[in-house]
Amino acid sequence: MAQVELIMPKMGESVAEATITSWLKEVGETIEADEAVVEIATDKVDSEVPSTAQGVLIKKLFNVGDVVQVGQAIAIIGSAGDKVESPSVKPTENTPSVTVASNSITNGITDISNEKMGKTSPSGKFLSPLVRSIAEKEGITSAELDSIKGTGSEGRVTKNDLLNYLPNRTNTTAVSPISTSVKTEVKTDTPVAQQEKTIQVQVKKQSIPVFPGDEIIEMDRMRKLISEHMVMSKHTSPHVTSYVEADVTNIVNWRNKVKDSFMKRENESITFTPIFIEAIVKAIKDFPMVNISVDDDKIIKRKNINMGMATALPSGNLIVPVIKNADQLNLVGLTKAVNDLANRARNNKLTPDEISGGTYTITNVGSFGNVMGTPIINQPQVAIMAVGAIRKIPSVIETPDGDAIAIRQKMFLSHAYDHRVVDGALGGMFVRRVADYLENFDINREF
Image 1 (cartoon, one colour):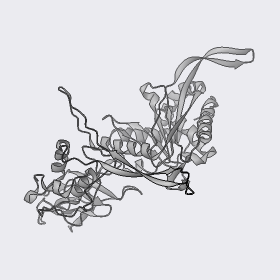
Image 2: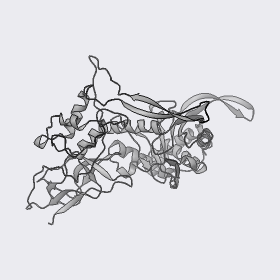
Image 3: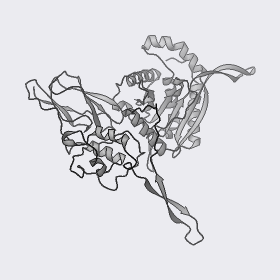
Image 4: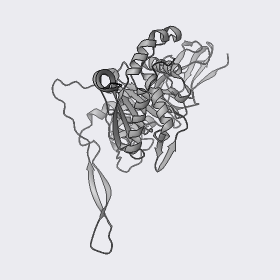
């Protein structure tokens, strides 16, 4: 057979590259068509690349840790009689660069002593794009890189060398404090009413003590990404949260009434999540200015309503699969989409495209017994809603005979929004509208 290139597949509109995390097949091994050959990771999700042909793995074009652009060849597949090349892949100048999370977080502040990181260290050691990227992110100077003993070919510093070095950096080699100039307006009695005053702000990395008996747990790759994304969101958006308590007695009674017949007809369990999503989608149509993103001083008003649903993984990490065009699905369609995405998320079967493109997010903190929460906005969105636990509580209701106290099913909705573009009036009206849709749920509706 003719040799075939295994290509890095397209993984969604916003994904241009992926990092090779492990090879599932070694050079010389037989590969079946559609059999997974290599595991890859993007900044969104981990996945596998299957073979497009049956044959033998002839050559690996990239090493573990290398970053590959979408559309690039990552391996060569041929027949048993083809010459098998050495599995060792030399890094080249064409290897794409990457930004990765490492053992310590510097909140995006870097200082490399104003020197531009080259392809080699001062002593002439080759520095791969991945190593250069980590070094730049962590503020490691070229001289400091030169002092690290490399375990790679010809003594080059590898990614693992760098990640092992970071926790052991001494105070003398750590990033030095950074001076930041902040402009302020100063009133004076002179005709010039405004002057600029420079204030020097020292930003220092906090030293965390470790006591006897403490256990140090290395963050996995996903936890590092979540950490960075949450910190970035808080730095980007001034968060405001509005709360509404909703009476969902009709929804609880309706679900109890139809869940068995729903399972029998659709072979799916109906949960509260698709019902909540349906109400949020209706409210977004009423208030489309929560379905936006911010690009500097521009507002991007989204045409599509793509609902993200925060999903807890068995590992304890979090992922947000997205229901595309949720406004075009009825309750049955939303139920199937929610169940499918949640199940595949827990089994690490999501594709990068399925966790990208969200325009609004819901997180169900009630599934953990929490009454309410203050969620962090999933950038570049501007709002997120947390739904709390449904509880039976005594409540005053109006009846034809006057007010009465009855047992009702109630829950809190927490709406966090970006105060740069969503003010309290809009944010508050939106969450109130969601509650109205939930409270006016038709108990006699068909599914």
